[in-house]
Amino acid sequence: MLVFVKNKHGESLMPCKPQKARRLLKQKKAKIVSYEPFTIQLLYGSSGYKQNVNIGVDLGAKDTGVAITSEDKVLAKGDIETRQDVKNLLNTRRAYRQSRRHRKTRYRKPRFDNRKRPDGWLPPSIESRIQNTFRWIDKFYSLVPNPTLTIEVGKFDPHKMINPDIQGIDYQKGQTYGYYDVRYFVFARDNYTCQVCKKQSKILNTHHIVYRSHGGSDRADNLITVCTDCHTHENHKKGKILWEWMMEGKKLPSYKEGTFMNVFRRRVFDKYSDVNITYGSVTTPKRKALGLDKTHYNDAIAISGIDKIDYDTYSIFKIKQFRKKKRSLHEATARKGRKCKNTISQRNIKNKPFLNDPPALAGGFGHKLSATESRISD
Image (cartoon, rainbow, N blue to C red; front, side):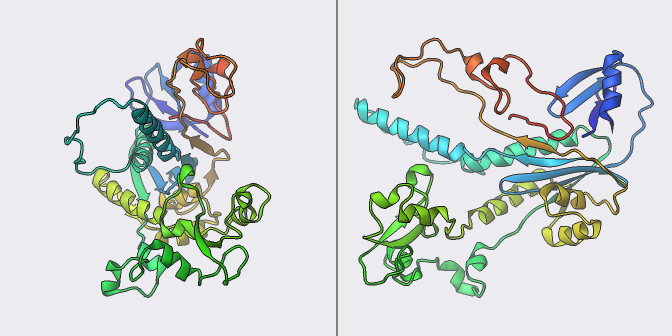
């Protein structure tokens, strides 16, 4: 991956090779201004030669591809993986608060000023993914001269994904329309057949594919039909029938990512009103014409508008965001499994600036410029 360069006034210049950046740093002609991604600033005046640079962004529900190209050269490419644990952390916090309120039964005066959400409010898990993606797009946009930004967005119709023949008033009727509740709809959808033993002459129950304690919902796409012989406590353990059925990956399709991409598309229109917008139907033929495999960063290369590739960087950066701050300084009582309570831990030791780094590196940078992968925290 090339190294981003700024002149002595903080303006972006064309990226350079790592060898040249290393030589400038060794000769004290430049200084490091950022490690994420690696950026240097010149300490002397330069001619400021600049080219037009194109930035292609392939948005995704989990991974986002980014590619930076100029003329017929690919300067940088890689993927950004946003956090996926926000919802589970909020559910855990909710459970702790609920338990605490049951233990402390003092009278709480009712509140009525926290019932209305502001305009444009989104659930924290969705807001986190959108804002972090925007932050990295703006970061790369500020590191190159004369940038032209092109973003691929997705437009999905979840109703038509479920039923391709839907039209008209049928859009106002959900999957469970005409059924007493979700439970009876699941039975009818599975043809009143146990999905484990495939028998019909049994008493049937509905079973959560992903348990509610692990973030699952009560929606129909997370429920299956099982009989009382299969829906037992023993069969929920590893090595049993129901557990093996779940581990085979036979879960029903989920359409929540299509809804997320629709929300994402509207937010892109609001924030980047003057950029180029494209869709997957345009990107796929361009990628195939360039002879690239199907990946997020290869899609981003095609999105950037490059016609042919004479130079392609061999390195691919990977940005993975994760939770790095642990806010508990000590424990008043020992947790289950500990022999004594933890009262000596310090915040700067427990925090980890980089993924899978030992705690001893928490005080330093713990990061080196890599030609193949870059691990970056949020």
